[in-house]
Length: 131
Image (cartoon, rainbow, N blue to C red; front, side):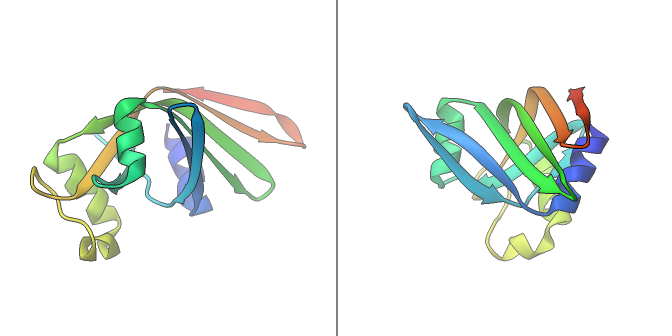
């Protein structure tokens, strides 16, 4: 999982795909964190992406870096633990201007469950990492 985190962190931007009914939706993201042995992303509670993940946790992210690309698929599970929210915002302090934590806060953090990451390139065989 550390290799997946390092790749996504170095890439800076990754693209998250969710589904709303039968329509896929893809958007850029930039938050990634490891907390309590799990890989997390962050968004706002009131955003459409949060609603989509709450209805259907199956998601996939994709990023490119130095001629390689990574795809991570699995379930994104909402974690209402304030410590997980705080850890994310501590990793991205600029987000504190927009997001707050706790039951009344507007930040939502999701961790990957049953995830498979595949790192690919035209120059090597795919590397598969399950976590």
